[in-house]
Amino acid sequence: MRKFLMLALVAGCSQMTDYYPDAQTVEIAGRSFFVTPRPANGPGVYLAGPNDPKGGEVFLASNMTLPVANVAAIEAVTGCPVLRETVRNLNVGTTYAAVSCP
Image (cartoon, rainbow, N blue to C red; front, side):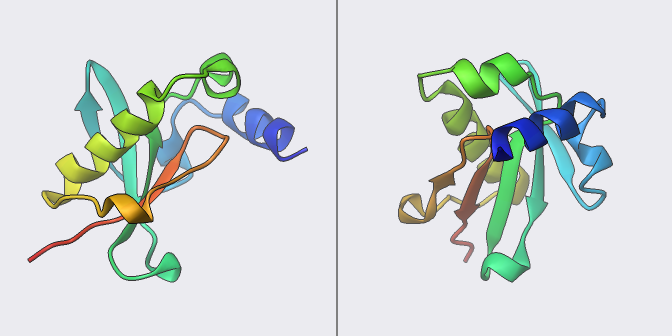
């Protein structure tokens, strides 16, 4: 049910930054990704995903290309390395992760 709700949500908008006004965007491998802080999830936690999500890619992909790009987007926006043990990939194509900034 959650997958269908997210698909309906995504289908109705052109970019995820419409839903996350505090998000920044970054280009990874020629594609735009959104990155937004999620302090309610813990200190230094960020959410990232494609800024122009494609339902088929999110629901049918079996490789790790999208999660790897999400982590790269978080690192690019924050300038800090992601703590690998905090990475949580969701089945809707987004990733939560905390960063370690000096």
